[in-house]
Length: 115
Image (tube, rainbow, N blue to C red):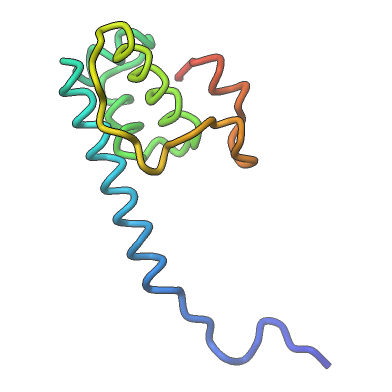
């Protein structure tokens, strides 16, 4: 007979949890640095998307609850950087093509809309 859940306690991997919080902090810092390099505020970005600056703050602090929103802001920043000829701080976690990540809706990201 198999017992589920197992009797022994399952402890979360403290190192992985620590790595995740470091990665979150780094991503938030990367958003802030890149916005600064481009001379953008959350309010300005919000205006471009038709949302409030506080909504953009939620997204760039990874508290929006929508996985795709940071990728949409990332794409926006990359596009602005290319237009302005500005070199950005690389995004370490948000890298590559979002279509390559099974858990992201690439079409949703491509639409570039934020609610």
